[in-house]
Length: 95
Image (cartoon, rainbow, N blue to C red; front, side, top):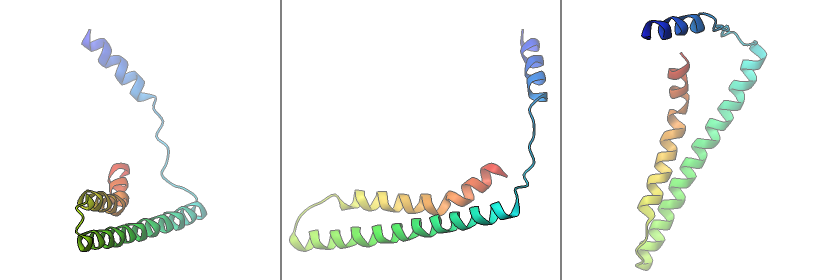
């Protein structure tokens, strides 16, 4: 039974095409420009999020109100880590 499944898997895997990794240079230039802009915007949004959360924490502490800003700060920092590691993660997966 297992030998038949293995043989079928080998036959199916043998017919899978392997496309080349060469994209036209004008396309890669445009894609790199767009990804650079998106990465810059993500970094700017992360910095703005940390600044806004810090300001909200300071205002709340001055008023004497308890709030859940640490959870919000954790989400902002998690987003910053995700934006910062997106490029290396994709490179690792596709290389």
